[in-house]
Image (cartoon, rainbow, N blue to C red; front, side, top):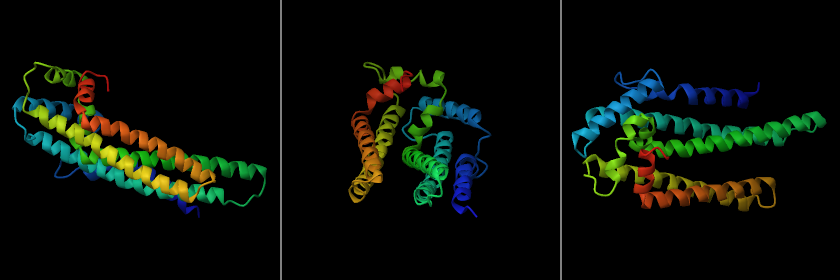
Length: 237
């Protein structure tokens, strides 16, 4: 029985359908993305108008849900990474029964490697979202709501109490990705050295370079988050 393909399929389906039900608690859940966007718009507007650094009750409930949502996704994506790597390894070790078989095995291995990389990116993104659920939630806020906040970041604008919280969380959001990308890059560099002069080593080295770029970009944003947050509020992010 092809255990690995079945396991990969089950985990992939769970990654799509399971996070919302598992993240829901005490009756807090959303019927779909439209409901979540509507709730996020109301909660963020209420928080902005409350003129307090402490999250309002509605926004606190929403960020708790979003934290659990990303945590579930991160765990499921992390489980998918070794499964796809194992599938790629199995394809690579497949017996050479013929030209078409070898071609199929090579294609399956390439697809498995690609899916492993996508799963790793999903782990990184969802760890980032779990560390800073407020900033991760902001893209769900409708554009017409976000556009109201851009002026508060401009020179001379009166600073609402919520603004430093948003700036700090946005900085933490990018710092989390910088740390995660650094850890991933370190692991990939070790793999590249261990499997040097092989295709695995070359692939690991290329991915390590990509992870380092992601880490550097996010480090710069974490150290100076205001321009990026301004661009986001203005619709440029």
